[in-house]
Amino acid sequence: MGRELFAAGKDGTRIYVRYREGPGGSGSLASGVGAGSGRLTAVLCDGIACDGFIWKYLWDDLARTVNVAHWNYRGHGRSSLPGDPQAVELRDHASDLAAVRASIGDGPVVLFGHSMGCQVVLEHLRTHREGVRGLVLICGSSGRITHHFKGTDVLAQLLPRLIEQVDAYPHIARAIWSRVPAPMALRIALLTREVDASAVTPADLLPYMRHMVDIDFSMFLHMLRSAGEHSTLDLLPQIDVPALVIAGDRDTFTPPRLAEEMAAALPRGELMMVSGGTHVVPLERKKMVIERVEQFLLERVIGGASLGASARASGSQAATDDGRSRSLAEEASPQRLAEGGSSPDHPRGLAKDG
Image (cartoon, rainbow, N blue to C red; front, side, top):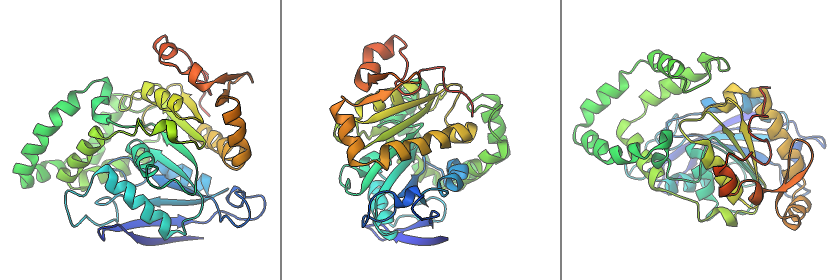
């Protein structure tokens, strides 16, 4: 059963939420978090300028086993613009996530983030950890994304000047931005190999292209600047819940080393590095991603306290493909990563297209 509703941000901004119940019953992961604790819900958090395109397949696949909720950021999709145009900081979105959780019953959740959504999820945990059973962080990092875009800090250097110009001439900027044809933007993405043209269905990317040119350009830039200066690196060692980090080794938007470092810093982090994957891995490797996510939910999240105690006792070990266990901190240490060491859960090059 699905329904749509609006949550209220702390400043009154209307936040659109869609919610879908899992199948229920004793065989459902949704009911496997313990009697009296409510049903497990996967809450999906987008990247910047997105309104759900990345979850096209996971929305249906996850609903086979858990409840699923997805929401639009303020100024995105069906959510309203904030009354205060400046209220688009990372902390505003993290606060909205609390309102979203409350609107669907505030039960136990697994928080999913894609791209900037990883930062939103992590910042949310700074003040709202209760009820969070696990994390799935996809193609993202712990922060400062504009300082790492395509492996340089050029975007971070250019952004202040660009914002100044756009804010000075908003009508001109809006006219230019809104006239970028979505099909043309898609062709450029395919030709420049920003996505894996051999693995992705072009029609799956068009909703993103269309939505991106439809949002307020100035708001987008201010959000991007906030995400670029925001960091949760200090928080990672304190997040003691199961965390699955998924990345593509050809992701130019968020360099894969950031995912490796994030997984290593999380006490119960696991890394899935997808060979040939880009910034849209859930659309390129649909079967492989959902199979790994379902395994993670069953083995790490549903086990709850017992699995958590076991992981802490063994030094946060992660199983490799051949069944051996290695310390995540050892496997993904800065020295090993600099030497091209493999990721702990899926050694580099071993992840195959599902």
